[in-house]
Amino acid sequence: MAGGNKRAVNEPEPRPIIVKKIIVDGHGGHHGGAWKVAYADFVTAMMAFFLLMWLLGATTEQQRKGLADYFTPTLVELKEGSAGSNGLLGGDSMEGKENYPTSGGQGNLAITIPKDTGNPDKSKERAKAREKDSTQFKNVKAQIEAKLASNPAMRKFAKNIRFTETREGLRIDLIDQADFAMFGMGTDRLLPQARALVAEVAKVIAGVPNDVIVRGHTDGLPYSSGRNMNNWLLSSTRAEATRKAFSELGIPNNRFAKIEGVADRDPYVAGDIYDPRNRRMSVILAWSAGAAMPDEAEMDAPAPEDKAAIATRDTPKSVARQRMDAFDMGGTSLPTGAVISNAGPSGMASGKMAAKH
Image 1: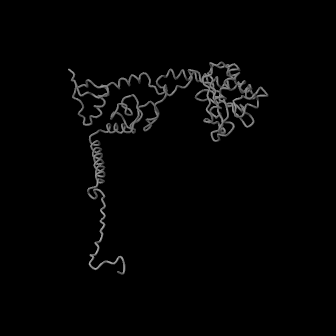
Image 2 (image 1 turned 135 degrees about the vertical axis):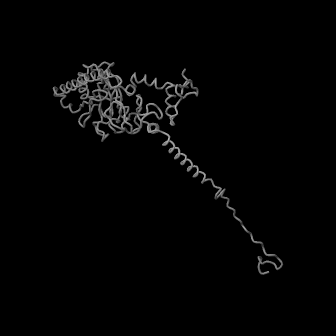
Image 3 (image 1 turned 30 degrees about the horizontal axis):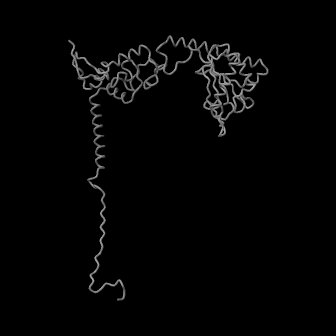
């Protein structure tokens, strides 16, 4: 035999090996589910369209304004017929003429409720007390400036003190400069020249009864890693050191309302947190109790007559009646003489009605 792979004479030919690949791709073609999602979206859109057409044909102009108010809430006033105050479908839209006692026109319903209108007498008393405090603050400023000007040794420090009337009261800023520092570098040790400046301020504010707030500030220079000090702690300890100096100079402890440090979060020079003027002490003479501006909770609280209106408006029967009237788009309403009875706590009627006899 010439070779080992040669087929014998009587040996049949080998059968070919056929490999058949079957790729299963799920239910392809019209058995897929993608068309169902598209069809559902189409049906939903058509339903919304026909619902809109029905609402446009079955509602009045006033009810459509109420719908617009419901989906785009405006400022709620407690008076009837303004800015959706009567609940769903019960008010005017943003285009409606507002009823608020302001000089604004249309489209500004969200900014027209004035503060402090609930108690005019209290506002007048606050204005008088605030005017008295403002006059007193001007006198404090004038006295401190006069003391610095009359003392040759202190005259040069006039540029290191600033007076600003703020929401908190009269803020007296004792500011560092390139040639003046309140404290030793990185410490809460009050330097002699700064103590002399604090003494001049203490002599004046000792003669007024206002509470005192001491607030420490630093620049934005960070401490090196591994140290136990940081700008928050440094500003707080410097504020306490200043308070202690004021206390030693005759300011009683019961006049200090707040001692705090804010690090570099409230810079004097906002554009450069590393400016030395950001290192300062703020000594604030607070407004007196009658002159202080009300806090947010007091400003947002409704007047007594408005509270009574809210209580009347939000009774279960009133809410149920408003909702039934609002949804009565066809104008059918309740039969003449029918009243809602057994209104649930949620404001919806339980389904029972009673006729007046």
